[in-house]
Image (cartoon, rainbow over all chains, first blue to last red; front, top):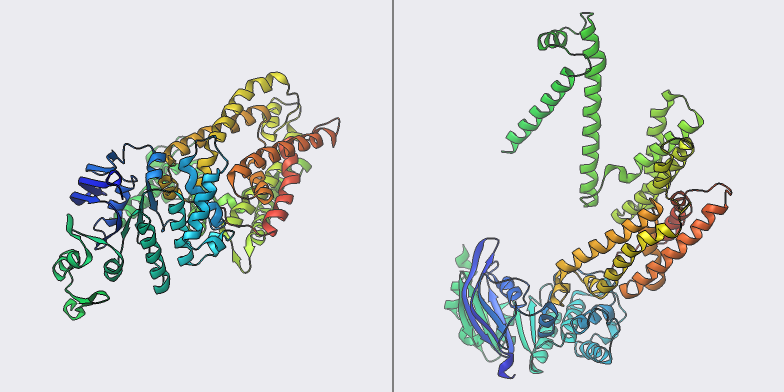
Length: 262
Length: 329
């Protein structure tokens, strides 16, 4: 990834409902897959939404390739950053093709209603890469949770933005669908995009991310490669739970000492 | 905290009822009021005024208010919709239509309250039957059935009033309420067309963004839709269009509710197709309805709004509700 696409957070404060969640978050994200982990309510989703320009930070700047995301027009931002909103319900009778076609909105001015060859190409490409080509004519309401998640990722791909942000992309997915989703995101990153995902399962973060950012009360607790960021000490600080981290050849394993919870 | 609020509300009701008993056409001083309240049968004029006129009146007012508020709270909770009104189930339009017809043909006043009650109930039952899906009530269908049957019955009321109002000073108002194009020509069109065209232009500019909004507000915002600006633009456009239609034709119901549903059946839910199709369907429908309005009872005219309700509502109920309503996409 060329340096000019670097996403830089500088001294970012995030407040939600009058409560300061995160203070002085400073991160430089370039490429690969970055996982954001942390306890419920710590501000992971708010941070993601701030990066996506959907939530103004209380202080600090968030810039992509040197341009403040808040200074971009909504369409410029949508061409630069794809924010995957999996949780929001959408019209159940919308077809997959129609949903993914909406990704091309930021490339059109208001009088340009028709799809261009570029649009067709981006949509076909996105459907193919997510394995959803066969679902084109299906209505969203008839899809499984895993299929629907692939459609939202296809939508983000068709946006052709260099940065993709995802909030808990594996929530409500069974084991197989979760693994397939994460593998798909790895392929997206391998194609040169920066993928930033909020994840709940530490095993998923360890196995799938190039880099893990651990958020705790007030800010960043750890940031680095999974085996450096996810340690007994950082997990204890972030979640208040005592976990034994075991290094195995196939990745990190986390053993909860549930007895200590009483 | 909650107990204190309830105590406050109960005190407010008692105070309101006391005021209701104390004030009226005849003035009663507080001492006399207290005396007749304690001695209902002392045979005085004051006792008659208080116990035969004011107390029952206050009791009726309290009953009406309590019943409507309770019904509204129940239906809003059931349909999980904050704008539902108890009249949604068709009770008011059903009662109103039967009373309007009864008044036109000269039914004795004593029969009117039971007639209203019975026809209100009958309309509600019909709405419920139409909204049924299997053993259950579908909230969306209940609202659509209630609104459209109410439109039909309101047309009956309008027609009855229109007949009674002929030759009186209220004729012009009634004609406007009934919706009509009688006597309209170029000057009226010239006055309303610019507003309508402005509304159309704004609408056209918002269609691609509106299409993206089908994915949900947060997703649309992430795709570059300025949702706040879109909301205001649409409100302005819809207001301009509605105001110019009302200025031209009076109240023409049914078209705005039903035509988009019909257009969706024809061209699908993509707004780039649905919105132009709605425009064309609505225009064709009103032109044809107006032809019927001025020919069916010629030389007299049937009000356009009334005619549209009579023809359109049954068609809509058959097509949409019995044909299987689908979730709005």
